[in-house]
Image (cartoon, rainbow, N blue to C red):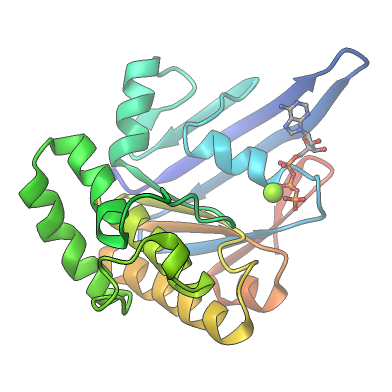
Length: 226
Ligand SMILES: Nc1ncnc2c1ncn2[C@@H]1O[C@H](COP(=O)(O)OP(=O)(O)OP(=O)(O)O)[C@@H](O)[C@H]1O
Ligand SMILES: [Mg+2]
């Protein structure tokens, strides 16, 4: 099986609250190959972040199947899911979630160090990635000493350090000005294209959505290709 493929079929997600049952995803089907970028747009609250959480193994679907990087996420146990999250998928969120007491270099190294336990190797992978995102001269800055765009670039380097088959980005440029947003987008598309990963971007920005090879729209729980 191609380990870069992300496929889901008849994916449903319900949220039960005290008052009601919300059916957020009503049967989502798609298949994304490696080296292809896709975008999802849709109104606020339609379930885009919910879908990304399921695809990244952070949440379980109510029914249906998701196979990502050769792992059947709907059937996987906690241990397999944790391994999948650590090695196969890279997340970029709107907010960077960098650790505030760690330098840029340490933040990027951390996922590799957690996986291998080898500090020197983690550092050897982190340095060129930070160079690639244009931050080779900011290695020892903590997040509070970086600009918003720089923090987001550190977050992208961190998402890519374990060479994930799948990169999931939720409003990756939502908090940035136009110039920084453009630089971060370029980086995301080019690094993913170079590595043959599957890139899925959720965005409200039609211009960014248009840069992806494939465009999807989520509305009323149904995903349609545009
Ligand atoms: N744990 C939960 N329990 C109950 N309802 C939830 C839960 N998580 C999300 N929801 C609801 O599911 C819907 C979809 O949420 P989600 O965060 O996926 O939307 P979104 O499309 O990412 O929106 P936005 O564009 O504003 O980020 C929302 O109406 C939200 O209130
Ligand atoms: Mg969201």
